[in-house]
Length: 327
Length: 260
Image (cartoon, rainbow over all chains, first blue to last red; front, top):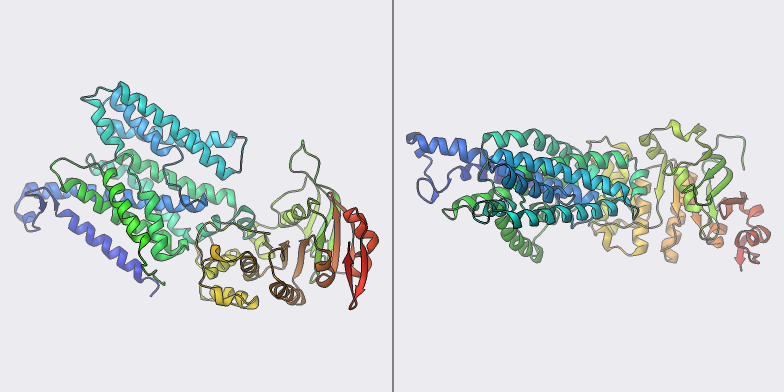
């Protein structure tokens, strides 16, 4: 009985994965017959070299953001924290915009620059927090994250202002709204070595995550090496976030809202809510990306859809009297 | 207090300050606590009682002095060994997420679980027993943040009981409790002490000390004024010195009763 909801969620994810391969705008909008794979070389190319890596990346993106969000909300003891808040998201946005204006809009260049500035944002937040003379370490990190994010978002504003309004500005705006249109197998290969180990670590330590949400003195009395364990879980979460943000741009709401949904259906205990958060994140991001690439001829930015669908879903589930699973 | 056996906790010439620029909180404190006893640390607000608990726990390190736990230096234990040895019930705790009371109490099993391990049936059983022993089992599915102040304090005690420590530290354990819940906790503490667990609690209520403790440690401004059995230490003279105002001790049903 204990594993029942997870079997259900895993099956749902696999089903969504397989169905997504046949969703798109070739050869006609919305749906491609699976039999076409045997007849049409173009269909085979499309499914295995464009759709499959994109689908897998969408799943990893959702898993990374939702998993990291769940970890960070518990470590910071604050349900309003989202995974990019330590300067990571805005840093990546700045890096991408800078690359588009100053170097080139080639996906690889933009992604590398975004990753670089995401890490820079984190490092800046960390050192600022260390040197703040105010509050406990949780408050200092939150304040430093807010300050560094504001710094980079003002930088993004400046870059948008000087950008060529016809060529560069749409590109920047589109990137900032998030999307997976540029993903190929090579992008997937960049993020897998970061995201997969990070998810494994947080999954293995999921019960201990509960302890980190307690006050320092209590966690210490229960044998937790508070500094080291927090640093480890925070480190892998931020690394996973930085990796997916560099490839996909700023995809909002997944990291904030999915952990809430997971706690709502599975209860607070991270032993259950963390795996649920990871699985739900993967499913949610995949479905949003399917809509993003299918609904119109042009692509809808993924960040817009995750916010729109996420907010509606969130309101609906939080208002409902949905029963909680009893594992 | 008692020199013949190995002391549960033995402190000698402890010095501690939170910051070099600030005055020291504890200066030259020495104390021996025998196993299986209930010791109360009594003193006015700001006397350094919680600081002393945190030093015994190992959360704060003294600038000078020696700490022996069960006869061995505190630093010779690993974090994990220490957490099996010493439990803490903090004065209050902010619980940001809606853990059920049972999930909350289960966290007390952490010292016995590896970094990747989940609590099993045996752990659940121990957690339930802990809840039953303080009469909180009917609230096991209730979200912990929704508990009243007193119920939350009971839940924190249950969590510390599930930890099965040899030494239990409690910071103002009865501050939010009504009379019947107070009795419940005090009975649970007495039962633990009879099983050989050393109980150390802080309080600023002399009458709680009179009814509950075997030994009392009187503190004022980071200094230990006197320590010893209730009968000889909880006296008008010592208490007046502790609180800096005249205190009277009368005998009520064979126990001292303090009036100020």
